Length: 117
Image (tube, rainbow, N blue to C red; front, side, top):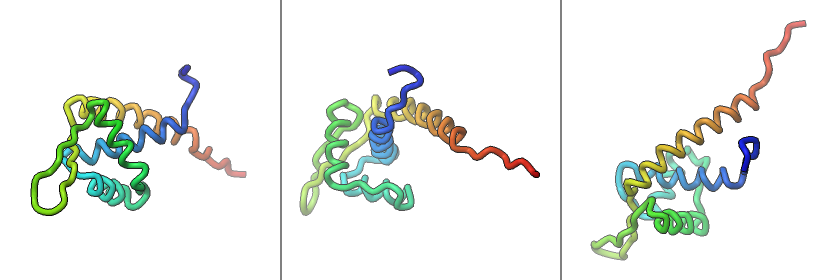
């Protein structure tokens, strides 16, 4: 892909991945908690459906960016996901890249100053 190409669908997937990773920065969480935190942190702008979130979690785990472990406790077992060192590095680099893209998009969408008549 050349510098001028922009994959909008790929960008949306990247945003979802980064939202999941960012919610794991402080502590490990199970899938439902990740979904709730992303929704709360985005003031309802982003809502994960079951069919969207879990494939993302499985891919991130397969890539070594997060680690899943089964919780031991009373009641139903839950898989708790935590950010790995490579995940932290990926999150930092990709967050920087996304901020650059967002800045360029904002500049593109900015309305020119109205010229007085």
